[in-house]
Length: 170
Image 1 (cartoon, helix red, strand yellow):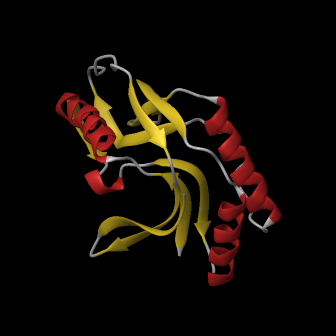
Image 2: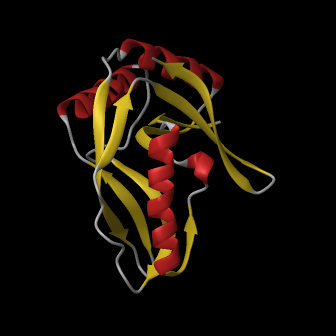
Image 3: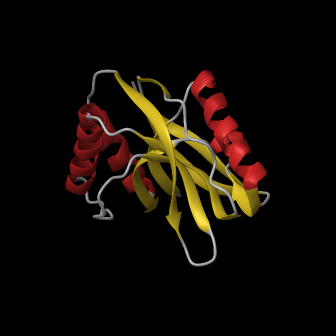
């Protein structure tokens, strides 16, 4: 089972993110754009996990207690790739978000996970393999209060990438 820990969004935030995705899509020559139900912000990617690791991930999440905090989505950007780019909506860094991500990573590492040591760059993927001649407009800042995190499974069902929450920590 392929897993990651994520922040999922409320309906209002999701609609605003989808509007950004749709604007990017209209400017793109081609690309693969995130399905509405798959919009999220990854905190930690775990990869393929055994049932024992699923249990360890749940325990690590439960130990990463946090108080609700606000996030602000205020930019668009891209990770440049050869021939096409990964486009994302940027989440303004804040201490509460970085602290939560750090605690999760530490708990998961203690639980036996080998995590990617790249620094955390909070973002929401909007499109992959995007080729675009123009850059979308600037973003009017918006956001929401984060009140929970989810352990998400990622699987292909009938050739459709499907994310499912299998554990939530309020």
